[in-house]
Amino acid sequence: MLVVTKFGGSSLSCAKQFKKVKDIVLSNPMRKIVVVSALGKRDSNDSKITDLLYILHAHLKYSVPYEDVWQIICQRYKEVRDDLKLDFDIEAELKIIESQLDKSIPQDYLVSRGEFLAAKLMSSYLGYEFLDAKEVIEFNYDGTVNFEVTERKVKERVSALKKVVVPGFYGAYGNGVIKLFSRGGSDITGSIMAKCVNASIYENWTDVSGIMVTDPRIVKNPKIIKEITYNELRELSYMGANVLHEDSIFPVQALNIPIKILNTNEPDCEGTIISNECKDNSQAITGIAGKKNFVAITIYKRHMSNEVGFLRKTLSIFERYNVSIEHIPTGIDNVSIVVARDQIEKCLYELIVDLKQELGAEVTLWEDIALIAVVGRNMANKKGLCGKLLSVLGENGVNMKMIDQGPDELNIILGINDSDYEKAIKVIYDNIM
Ligand code: ASP
Image 1 (cartoon, protein in one colour):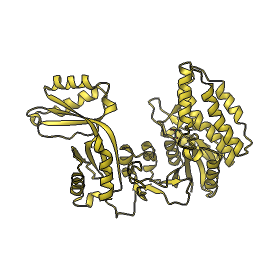
Image 2 (cartoon, helix red, strand yellow):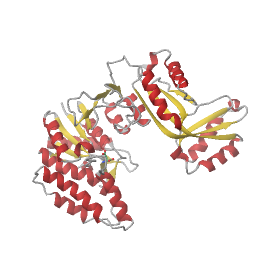
Image 3 (tube, helix red, strand yellow):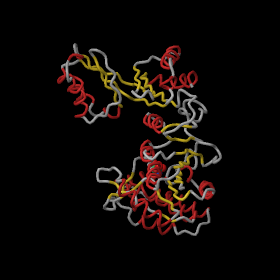
Image 4 (cartoon, protein in one colour):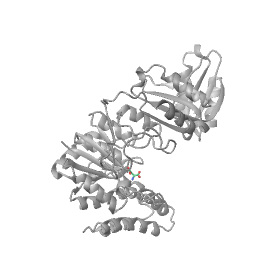
């Protein structure tokens, strides 16, 4: 029985948080692998170390004086060490980094030092060994994780060391050059570690007592989801729910290792459990998430539906511009391609010209679309849910522009105007949850 325990930046923002982490880790002897993020914000006006490191890199790159930013970073780590009264030479670690601060320092290496230093401090504080992620997490040169090599290395090192602290967020290519995951990537590190040692559970400790049914910035104090499947969570994460990095689901899902989302500040709260088997089937909807800023490009052509290959030709034009497509609602003589605005901003007008010329079609643009995903494993058996959704939104003056249900009936995607986004989420939460 082995538990992989990951702590996010808010659980490591200062000495007080480090103490909570220690209490949690030591209260269960199975917590043998601890993954840490960089130090997070101490309060809402504070800065995350990772953000400061990105700023530091930009200062170095553009030859802007950088000393002040560097001093703030050093101070944060020294303060934690001093407040914990740790006998750990953090100055020596900082000196090594400082000696490399120049224009050519690779961004990924510099930014990874946030988790590196946090893990060094935590390993000294817990009395666990420090295991550098660059020695175990190996990337292929195409940027994907080489699971075969990683698993072999993790198994070798973990069995030799017994109890370890691993910095999250990065690994290295075969040549030793450090590479970061995308932002929030310490979640992925935890998941990879859990997979490699076939952990009995992957605990992800954060500053909320589980995954909320919807965005708390829109609905005040939403309910906490007690149980959720990996697939449901993927749908919600993809559509903007940001408790857990979406790429952290696949590694553990294959082995059905449950993920628990827990609160470092309220360790006795049950939290949320993510697995393949959920016992509670009482709720039709598990969660609601969404995003603004989509664009629909609608293509009209008479007899389009009789023209074999029309859709293929259309999609190949989007492919040429390297645009990823979200949804494709179709009519008889028209088809809409829904894409995220940031995907298409740079090439929108060239793409429209190509669509018109190559397809001989009329093209119109609908901007400012928001997409809302209503997600639930139990929706498939509930009759009338779609009808109820549409009617409560209509009654509350939300104009539905598009509706799409995934083939597995795990989600219903609603397309509305950006300006109706917050209202629509509130209406669904208040009337259907
Ligand atoms: N420190 C990194 C970030 O802020 C990675 C993480 O915390 O997961 O994105």
